[in-house]
Length: 108
Length: 223
Image (cartoon, each protein chain N blue to C red):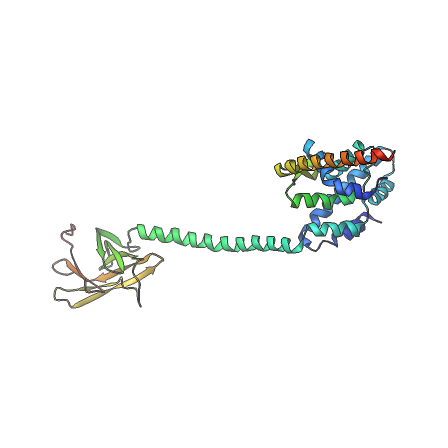
């Protein structure tokens, strides 16, 4: 399992990225993250909710109560503000990761 | 750990109690989803529930993190503002109803209930404090009524009593009868004066500032 510090630093990026494709409830987000990362992002599932609620407080996402498969679910949608911050996060992440890659390339 | 116990450990950390139920419901739905997926994979329900709860993580830690996002001060301020708005709306509705009612009075000519309106007078009299509309001459049980409405002049600063009432005097200025005030509202009031029909069918109305208005009932078509 990957160090938690790496995950928590980039959760905003990961969660917003999932929500940009499709509005999801919490469990769906976890499933998509696990699937896409080949189970590397196997975070404790409950810890997603403080992150979601923070993103909502910051107005990057909004939640709506919607009927999903016959059950009332809290479904999260990305906002315009969220789309904007996601683009910024992505650009930053690319810059950062390419810099890291360049540095570790020398280690052999 | 049982599901209820797990959820309670989380919600106990949330100081803003009004958000507890929503949070509990959201997490409960998550656990339910997780269980159903495992049951689909052939795991027994109770076993799946145990695993699902384990996968959630430390409830106290989750609760503490959630509490940061559901700050009690913000929550209670929001609640307070909602209550204040409600409390303001109720008196505003009441004032609105009173305004509409009073507007209705102001624009509706007065009569005496049960009496016959025998003459429309509709004479406007302006005094410093009020605009007075002498409406109708009514008759009931050997008694004549002169009905009127008054509208306050809002620009006028008042001292003491409202002064829209008037006396009915004879040609020499001697007092015969005073008007009786019947109803008062935000904009003014309404009332009537009872009088004995004079021989010459002429009424002298003396207002508070000694303004005298002569109403010759014959001119208004009295027979």
